[in-house]
Length: 225
Image (spheres, rainbow, N blue to C red):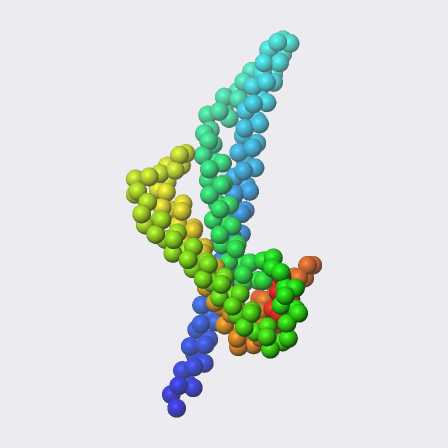
């Protein structure tokens, strides 16, 4: 009689851990895309500010506007003293990491594009194995990519660094196994929920996403896209 007593606490613990992972996933994506956008904006302002102030200084000097020339030259000197050559590289890495974790979020929320014409034509009883097979294929593919990515990261030269930031390359490429394994776990999670309830998360055009629950997701057979 001990098993029923422990079943509910274990289920609650699993649900709590899953909620923590969901929130962490969302915070990582939001932080990365926000930081990359701000960094790119600042880098663009810096680049155009330096070039335009230099042009303004030359124009002011040619037309005898001494004060304007000195002001423009001062702005140019101040901007060129700030080295932002690394900004584009860092923004690129942040967008790559965001995309890898965003792909896993897409599986969890059901926003990946899919073709459901064949599934819709099947009888309800025949849809189940097809849907499970499709989800298993997704899990297998992302699992393989994650494993290959992990092997690649492991075999990287520890002394290999990025061109501008000079960060170890293994840190940058770590997004491949982490993002792929997370995506694989999301495929398995969706498949487990489908086997239990026949429901999977889905987000149609113009429909706001709701966190997947056993009773609040759309049937994949009718709405997989």
